[in-house]
Length: 251
Length: 308
Image (cartoon, rainbow over all chains, first blue to last red; front, side, top):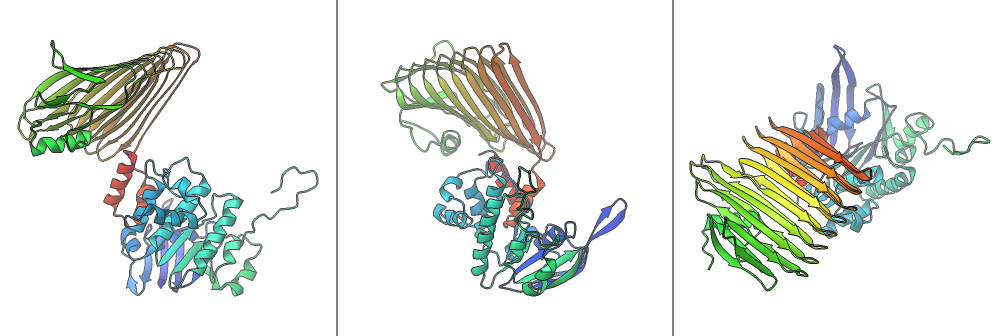
């Protein structure tokens, strides 16, 4: 279980300290899928980075299974079972998809094992395993490879920062399937997704609404979701499916 | 008949992936003497009589054969200048593995300057692999100055892989190529410098015939206080395609000077150059750290991939 106790995070902004996260307390129990939503600029991505150790809180404590990990770096937290999928996946010249999955697995896994991870995110493994993780891959492909690396890590807590960002609608529908399958196989592991896509909120066990750096609401999906529908915290796939008369384009 | 000590064998493994006597034609040069030589029915290796070096003659139509001509130096203070000429017959298809390893444990500089000239016949295909490596704890420098000249006849194809990853203190690499119609040259250079090393790599490629093409790509890493200069010039004298690229990672107090040059003397010459120098992106390191690597391990993985 991950526990955030009164976490705050400030950054200097034009000579004054700007508070991005304000006194946030959260519990992420094992075996649950939690979605953190809220308007842009509300602190969601910062919260994910604080959990992964990419940023350090200016106040408060982070506990993982009772251990205080507030002072631990990214590597130590990864070693303790925290996985993190970037909103903007990183490209590497010369590093192949297979290399990245092997690094993630922490051991020399066979090509066929690596392919299993790629297949589970909907990529035809044979076509990708030897490709470099470079600019030749599309945003959707990179996103799926990013998720495959987190799967290969087998983390006890996997954090996904806006998995829908930068991918096309078709890829997004496949991604929902990936998360649905992860949800089914969750067991004692937990998943935290930063998202304001309604379809991702729909598969959550619990929803946390972050606004202006504070927890504005939290609870079971069925309690929290109804009040979010139609707001910036729960965006539908395509709000304007019916084009106005004479319009050429949809959406 | 090969008499090599353990250090010489280790150098051979580093520069030519050789664990034993290679198949096919070879000449192994050790401390300025030939430690073994073999010609084959199609490939003849003979020592030059006027200067130090070899003539390697590959008969027209020779297919799927290889030539190994590695050089190892383990005596401190040796300085040598060697001329090797490759006469590659028309329609042949061969692999040539060169490379030089210097182990200098003494106080004097060791230097190997190799001048390789390739005369590539019509429609011949050559893959050339050259690795340079230095080791040893002595104060004497390990110096390698390779000069490469490539003369390609019509329709020929040359692919050159030149690698210098470790231990060479000073290197001035000069490569010149002249391509006739339809000839193709691909160069992949990989270079890493560290300590106080200096490396200068200069290319002048002339595309003289219609349909000639060249692709010269260097990937390099400069660490510590090392310095690199990459100076690549492609001259288009006909309807041709030329591309040169220098992609570098800079670390510590390293310095890199990239001087890409293009000269078009024909209205149908299509020439492109690209150059990028920068430190390792912070988000690359962070990503690998989230996969459990330390910062140092992440850097190593990024550099290994980059220089693959």
